[in-house]
Amino acid sequence: MRNLLLIDNKSCCHRSAIFHRQFFTHSIFQEERIMAMVVCSARKTIGGFTLIELLIVVAIIAILAAIAVPNFLEAQVRSKVSRAKADMRSIATGLESYAVDNNKYPDVPASSVSPPIKLGIPYSRACLIKLSTPISYLSTGLLTDPFAIGSTDTTFFGFANAKEAVPFLPAVGVSATTEQIDQFEQHLWVLQSVGPDRVNFALAGTPTQNFPLAFAALTSRTSLDFFYDPTNGTVSVGDVVRTAKKTD
Image 1 (cartoon, rainbow, N blue to C red):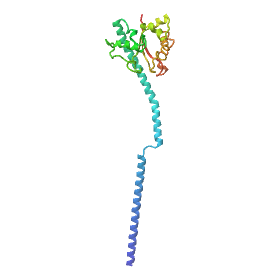
Image 2 (tube, rainbow, N blue to C red):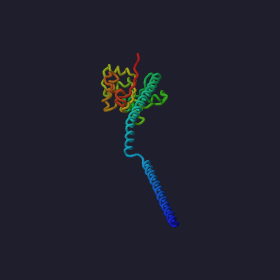
Image 3 (cartoon, rainbow, N blue to C red):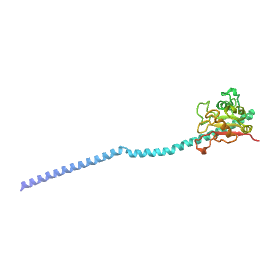
Image 4 (tube, rainbow, N blue to C red):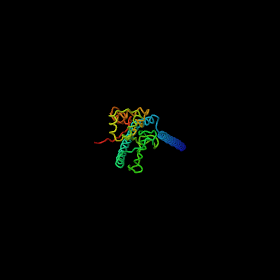
């Protein structure tokens, strides 16, 4: 009987050891499985966006850019138009101050510029320089056209002394009647910015192609293409123009 009890005790101990070993083995296996799942999940998280998610993000950025960039560029153009107008007001003040001191508006001999006519960029530059030297009539110095392209020799605002320009009108293709000339001379001077299209309207094409259109715009106003009009589009043809008219 005693031997049987000993055998039963041994069997129980053996079964208990086997159970504990299986239990701990199973527990370890479960822990390893859980750890593997955690690591796998972490890898998926660290892996970043899927291709679909990236495509959606890129599409959203493209849509926002398509909306924002044109508005930004348009705001830049409007800002430059405002600056051009403000600078032309400053130049107008300088022109009037110059006229008070000299009883005439700036002018240089045609022979001192090339081509030898009192119209165009070389003449404009030579005349406007008189507002800064030897006496400065502009507190901010000589101003340049914010829309003009090129060197400092070609970025000046356009300027015409109407009375002095009349004898040179035929040279640029303008055939004017006496009445048209009288109307033109009602403008004491003309200031011009090339405008957002960055093309000098009067000088575009051949020298005799657009000058007559600009002249017509200033006299009979039969052609208004010379004048920049933002209602035609922020970046549209035409120049920003300022004139001074005779007063009775």
